[in-house]
Image 1: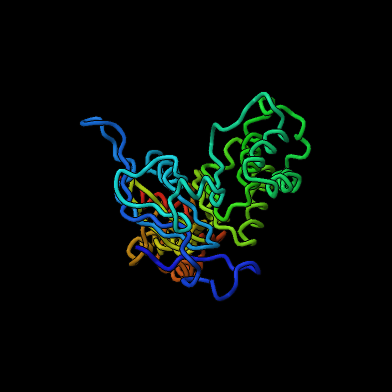
Image 2 (image 1 turned 90 degrees about the vertical axis):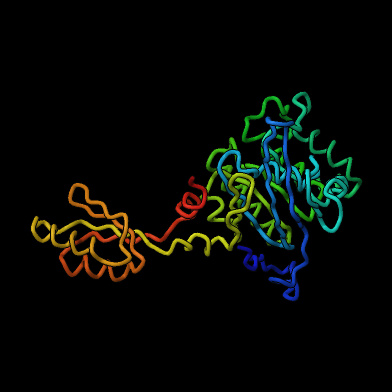
Length: 324
């Protein structure tokens, strides 16, 4: 499915460019990418069509081997597709990357351990000209690197090195940020700070595409979620819509103390249309119901207590979409 994507509205993004009117900045048409030769060939990406508009925040989800990182590498011009075309801001991905219009925070690599954090940012900034060099102090601040400025990169933790990579992506002032597991190795505080900064970047009109294994990050931050499985896109929708796509909610309650009443209640719910996954354990019942209100009414009327109703999570939808 290819619904109208969600877009980020902000003072930096004129209302006239909102929604479907925003220009397309990323386009993948019929993308395939294979590795290996003959019987050892692996199709990492198997026919992907994807468009992303300016100002969108898109999460790319999928189990290991789904093709997420390969897709990001294609967007960055690090590899060429075996078939299909990739366009970034209307040009070849490799050209957009060379001009600094698209930048990335990758999981590994790209850092020299023998120079300091500030020197690292300054070296990369120098490749993008004087304007980028002037942005170094602000970039260091936004990435939370000021206390680490004089520390050698080799002495930084994994999470701190990720923040250095973030600064290297920001210093070019790109139109598009591509993030591959950007908070890997960060502690909880650093992760929250990172996403606070990313929200500010999105509000400034930047387009953000990120792959993550942290489903809660996609749920809290991404306005649109693309799910990949075995090299294909199996879902593409606004995150809230995807989360609710399974329809049913989880309902849980403590059964009445009277054993006969509890047994009748369980039997009644088991026979109710739209009720699935009914489980009873230690006097507590849990089920999924298309009509959660009706199920809750039956439970309360029969004397159940401690009622809980939980909406579907992105994890629930993700599991349903990618299970074999």
